[in-house]
Length: 98
Image (cartoon, rainbow, N blue to C red):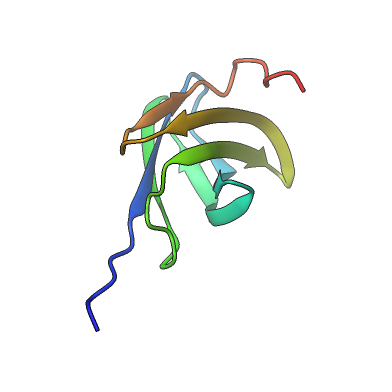
């Protein structure tokens, strides 16, 4: 039996507010939750988080990164990828339409 490697999903978020606790960062792949990093602190500028699920293999396809504050998703970004990349989200940007 070969060793199966899992992949950390790196989320980089640009935040233009002051320092603030209580953000949750979630990643979904093809409708399946990759993971949530809960109660994170955002600082002004770039914030980087590793979201990990031992079953996540970095497969190509559709992804959604969601940001939640006090239990409410306030923005999300949808994208598709075939390679591993770092994505930047501006929490001040309006959420995508339906």
